[in-house]
Image (cartoon, chains in turn blue, purple):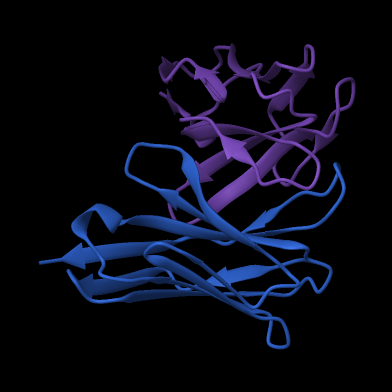
Length: 112
Length: 111
């Protein structure tokens, strides 16, 4: 079945760049998403990329997609303490009955 | 713009009690979902409703029931709560070919 894998933890210094990685197995994925979950809150959609794209940039966020290796990454430039959160990678496909598959989440810790 | 609204935000139950978690969305989305989130386990799908009038089991449906009351509302019921059901419950909705939108969660403790 479908699987999405992420590393569990990442620690960076404030001002540095953060790179969170994700691998997936479903080659029929149409969309790949990044969600952010702050403590005590729900999941907030950060950004998403269509499978026919290689890169998407949105302010400090850059998403890179390597379809051949089924590898997705989220780069956060100039990481701030407010970026400390859990980041979930998810993949989805077309169709109303398709169930998106989530990774277990990467906890990003930003220290001064 | 409310999005996905979950009630209650917090609840404490005794083992064996029943309760219903409510979820409503105002985005006219077809599909709605219930997840539970436990430490180290990520999100696990309990039940989903691809469209009004249909419901299907997810990964961990045992001990739960759902009702898609109308297009806006999707409720999750625990008939006889067990300590293993202590968790944070999230409702989500999405339109076809769009990302899911999540509520803020219900934090449920069962003693």
